Amino acid sequence: AYLTGEFPGDYGWDHIGLSADPETFKRYRETEVIHARFAMLGALGCLFPEVLSKFGGVPIAEPVWFKAGAQIFSEGGLDYLGNPNLIHAQSITAILTFQVILMGA
Image (cartoon, rainbow, N blue to C red; front, top):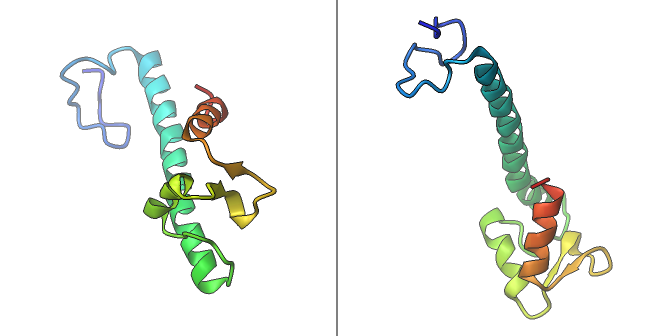
């Protein structure tokens, strides 16, 4: 009886009791909002390079999001924003390490 339908998506069904504690339920809702915001930024990050290359005239080596990561395995590595002086990535291990550090793991 702790789920009363007052929250979005609350249909009163919680068969393992994840929302039984009100403080835990509040923390889960806040975490879900944070994850949704990161997902929206990720979607923007997928679309933005394609839009820039197609309509903005910005030369991007591989604007398609699902092909861009494979550039690190090419001969010269991966140049962020097309500039070899900015970040020149050649090691997938280094990229993974920096991503974990920057995302706060």
